[in-house]
Length: 280
Image 1 (cartoon, rainbow, N blue to C red):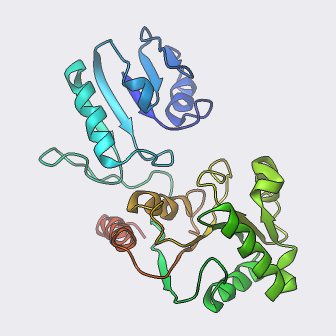
Image 2 (spheres, rainbow, N blue to C red):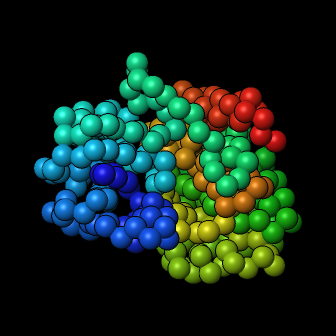
């Protein structure tokens, strides 16, 4: 079996599960050249372009890591691999190929409900200001001792936002952390502290991946071209990944994009499927 994933090779979920079940014929690859002799071969997107062996089953996991590759890239890779295998499963939060069998599966181990994003539209220059509505959310998150991921479009905006928030309310200053300054290891450590709120400001889309905690997520400038519906939906899924109480996902923008609308539609669809299946 060939398993294609963008997960950190040290933390691939299926590897952990298979080894716990006593299955050891697994090869996990860090380099471009891969060993295809084991029963389960783990590789990433670019390594998969170099496979030579034939497989009984190929699984493309588009769910358990940040969606770097777009849907057409997925289709291209699966089309390339298809002649080398008997069956392909695309594990994704959207239909990859039309006319194929689609099975909708709720997330295991929890209710699986997805955070439906709140869209806040403003005429303010988002490179200079944070609207009052977002400031009020931050005050509430601080009061509730929440962990907040505040995403900005670039480092320049990140510094301006941090400076603006500290200036308008000194009480926020002790809760604000620039992830570039403290590092992701310190971020993980701080998230274990339940006694106070933490607001992590970053422009890096994967700084939070290893944080084992639900997050309140504010996407500052969600109408930026860097965000397609795939990235935005991943934030909605990630905000409630670790326990039953989902975090908020707030999309702050100057104009609502089609990708933002599609994200909200898809989140609502997933939740409707869960309601129809009897989850509460």
